[in-house]
Amino acid sequence: MSKQPASKTNLKPRVSGGVPWWILGIMAVLGAGIIFALVQRSIPEDPEKLFEQAMVAMDKQDANSIRSIAEKLAAYPEFANKKKLLDGILQLGSSRPLKAIVLLKEASEVPELREKSFMLLGTAYAQSENLQKSVETFETVLKENNDSNDARFRLASIYKEMLALDLSLSHLATLIKAEYKLPESCRMRGDILFDRRQFSDAANDYEAAIDADKNNPINSVIADRLVQSLLKIGDLKRAEEYLVLLDQSPAKGFFEAEQILQSGDLAKMAVVVESLRKSVSFDPRSHVLYGRLKLKEGTAEKAAEGIAGLRASLEFLTRNAELFQVLADLAKLAGDENLSMAAQQNFDQLQALDKEFLNQLMAVSKTQDGYEERLKLAQLSREIGQLEFSTQVYQSLTNAYPDKSQEIAALREQLYKVLPPLVALPLPAEQEKAAPAEAATEAKEATTPPPSTTPEPASTPEAASKGADQPAAESTPSSESVPATDAK
Image (tube, rainbow, N blue to C red; front, side, top):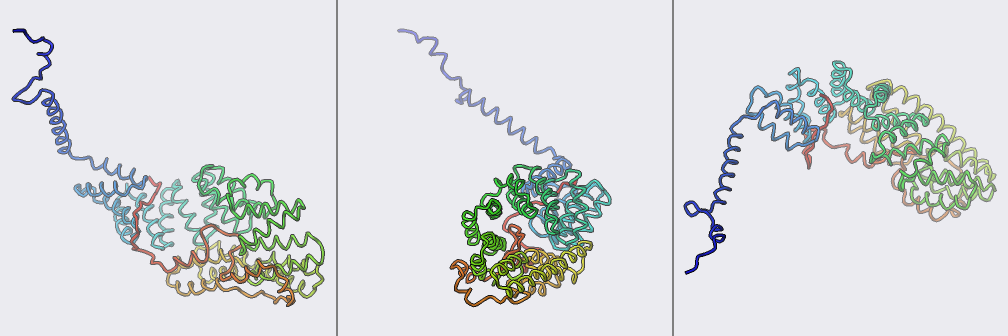
């Protein structure tokens, strides 16, 4: 009888009580892991480290981590105030500012939590539309820590919203010098200067905002304002550098039209202008360009054609000084002295109102409140056709004077009604038949007033009115977020 080879005999698995040795090895490892995990869970977590993790989670806007840590801190009574801070953050992120305010006030009583709590408290007051308390809170932070650029930035933003523009500009100058949030700070200052018609300075700030962050997703919006500013001061060469950022913005079309007009290619100009008049019919610039084209053609016949082509737009663009200046020149060239005189009178009166508006803006800019003064500013901006700016002022008033919300809402509704021209225009009846078909279509479709000559993306009278009557606080959002703050 032959013996089995030794090699095969050695391959038999060793067993212990019927269990293969390799299974026993795995069980030993798993057992050690379970024992280690149990030991780890038996060691109390360091609450201070937990709180530090929560602050990191807040910077990342990680609400779930903050909530989990807040629950763990409940086991440490000595961390009650720090838990209140975390609970306040969660309430603020859930758009419950009134509940957040109570918690953050209590947390602020702890010296080491004071600045952080006050930064969040100021945000909570702003969220609850109590702008004055928000200002007082951030001013307190700045008084105790003059190096808190985060508090300074938030103050600049709130002062801008309150139309206290001088104070906003003062803080923005400090922030820009310190290179703090340059894209946001430069853009904010640029917007203020744009509204003040300081187009050259505004262009410099918009340019600096873009240069500070080449990958900023809103650079196209900033570039739109930049190109508008440069067109206002006639710097087409500099504006051309930023056209690539504009995508399909109307600003690109207006730039191209201006460039062609200066080159003298009137046939090409006509194509571009008609395209603009169809795509952005409520923008006065398209109709001003059309009038300038007809003036360039230089004959009485073309001037009369231009008057006819502007007739429909003049039914809803009744307060644009540039349009009336062009109309006056066209009527003069066409030999219609009565129309030229009436158009010139509209231009002169609008110029006077524009000067009054700028004076009122400067006066309001020096103050933090004043209902009647701001109301007058809104009404003057409507008188000169700056409907976007009127909307901004009415929204600011709604936030600052919630008890006046119904009155303000009624005034804002008036923006949808077209004001008559300051001086009636003696347009000949036969001109109506001569008007181009597309102009007649524009008049038929003009059911809402045109936007301002200085549009701000995502801010229209219609959009603003949708949120006007929403409750100021304690709403329940569909998703939760965490307020960001740089205060340390």
